[in-house]
Image (cartoon, rainbow, N blue to C red; front, side, top):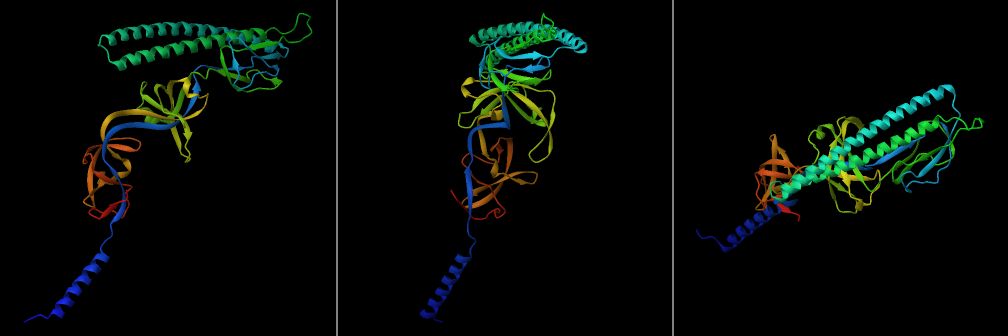
Length: 391
């Protein structure tokens, strides 16, 4: 039987129409955002807010009750050691107050003796750290000691020197407190008119005025904070972290300090406080947190006391690891998986994760450098579905 050309034309037209309908009704490729698996540096960090704090600072309070004359100083003014920071005219002492003043003087003398002993201990610790640094320098020069151990010895000497400076400042403050307590016992002038002898308040250290608690002439009770003086050229970092994270932090770990508009600065963890405290999070949840103190920052940052900074404590870091953005991970059977773009389709592939950074994770197995993965996958993605990289 012969088939007419007309029938062949109608069959061809029907097949073409069917193919056109199938083409129109085919599933459209989903536009996805992708990233390439690469090899590079990775850091595992604990990221928190932090505050700067003057390493050497002292708060001066009124030694006795009386009228404080207005101070010419203002916050930010420089002061030298021994400079007059205010004058206090004590009220005449009654018998009970006089007994308390004698006890205060005895206590001030004991605190000064303790401060003097702390200075002697700090001198011994500084000298020992200096000898350790000199010994480490000789060993490093001969190649018997790693450069990192030498840097640790140098940092240890600097820390002991700062501790000695702080101890000497505390001794000066204790001596000042003793002089104030002694002056408080001088009750009246030689003529017996009942006027109290003025107490001259002096700065126990050189630095700048960090805060003025009392700026005007008024009567203040004993113990009232008057002024805080510190050295803003030597700053340390204080940042509070969750107590469960604090157990992974040890002194010497790198600490990256970020200030808006400036290059990040690397410091080191100096110490982790031994006691936690309760703090309410922005979500209203009570958390146990621990203060982590960072070593002194360079003066070139131009920061002052109690400036806000961003802090990253580096728990682990490497220069060359296989890594992928953490936004590509999806949970799969108590493990992790990613969608890999393969020949225009999304292929679900299980992966093993080694370490997690803030934005990237280290891949132990399942991926290779150069693989293209889908980041921010949504519920539309299925294994084998057609995709089109948006980038």
